[in-house]
Figure 1 (cartoon, one colour):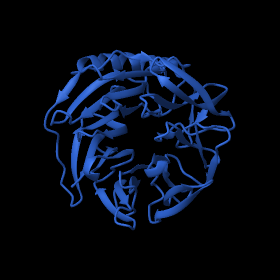
Figure 2 (cartoon, helix red, strand yellow):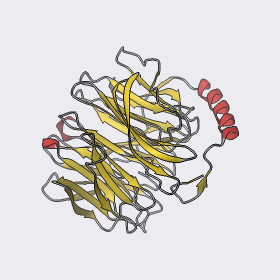
Figure 3 (cartoon, rainbow, N blue to C red):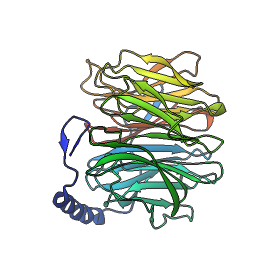
Figure 4 (tube, helix red, strand yellow):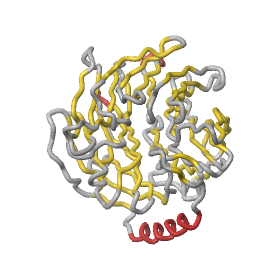
Length: 381
């Protein structure tokens, strides 16, 4: 048994319901077209962002991950909760196209994506057996899955990055009846070597959503959170056990990015008062700055990106008292001081979000809208 994010108790294995879900899922997925394209719906345009509803077919849009290539094309992976499917959206062809790529397991997270030097898309996802699979479109079409080769029981949101040498860096959360642990793997799909970064028994639970980035020296940097103590830990692949720096009082879903000079940047909400912070690694500690202290206690999810000029961009959820639900906001220090803008103030937007900065310092945000169960996308004007 383990605690969910809401404090409820979840059984480790619910085999019969899962079998039923999978059977229904496969029937429903088979009825779906593999590729769906067309004009997306457009909500009102704000002064700072153009907003687009990319997918509104039942309950879609959870766990969005986003990347932008040098050709200006945007790539997004996300979860179709109705059909337990991994989906993918891109505007590479000039208009948005949506694809159903695979049946994925109902977990705390689904997939991550990364672009190689040629702009090919590589996706790692958790399948219905709680195992990791790789696919890519390097051949001009989506490849057959390559089994990651690790144990089952992959339950959390995986992270993936490709370094300058074309090697893959992966981290993910695993859990069984005895405990839970975070694994880091390095190599090429189908030929990865793995290291256990940290292990927790049933008295200590680590976050099922880590964040990882790789610097220009091919060093992997990772953060993870102890859910019980709310202590965030930073470490890197030079020595996972020794290079640890901690920050106390951190809520779930902290995020990290690598900037100029291989600098390490974090965005996170404090716990329990939910103040949005930005932190920069300086030597052997993080220097933290309050970005917004007026965020509501319901706020808890942020994403961070650093542009080619070294400026920081953060998307995050807020739940102001005068709103009917969560909204999604954006903060940046690109003007020298922190400026906060509302991306989408409609009811219940941005509970889960991802951010990327593309050519020309354009900001791209993918986010989930719980009230309408849609995948939404915002691009800075």
